[in-house]
Image (cartoon, rainbow, N blue to C red):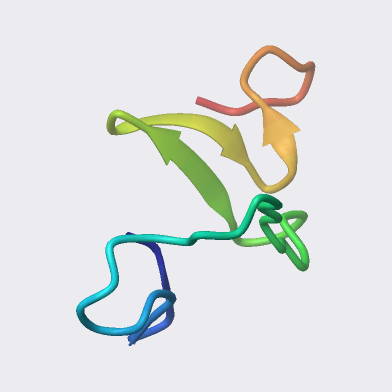
Length: 56
């Protein structure tokens, strides 16, 4: 399950979100940020690895 800081997003003893609608809220991924999938960085500071300007 995901978390926001140190707080769990799903209350204890719940298995997940029962909502039919799921929304991820991302505020700002333009500075000092990264997205990793299976330990591999796929986005850094707002730029995906397939875009010009992505620094390895």
